[in-house]
Amino acid sequence: MHDIQDNIGIDKFAHVGAGYIIQDQLERNCGFSTLEAFTTVVLLAYAKEKWIDSDFNKADIGATVIGGLMYQIKF
Image (cartoon, one colour):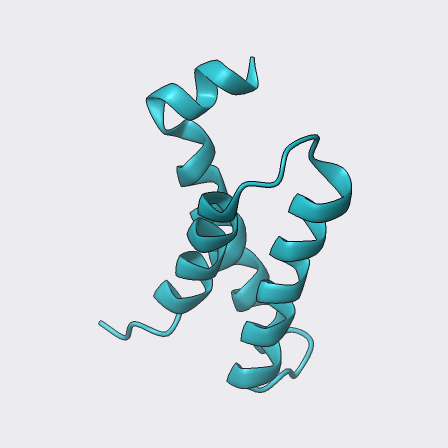
């Protein structure tokens, strides 16, 4: 199932969304500064890939981090 998700890109969109939501919630509800929240997003992404997934994927970490960065875009 994970291979199918990777092939069609759903997995990367999920990582971007997760990074965005985590960044949002840490800043809005937990009182984290932007830097603290971003650092937490990076660490959580790394920890998930290192200890939870069966294979370490740098692209997944990058997608999660991009989601955290996207939260900083003001419209």
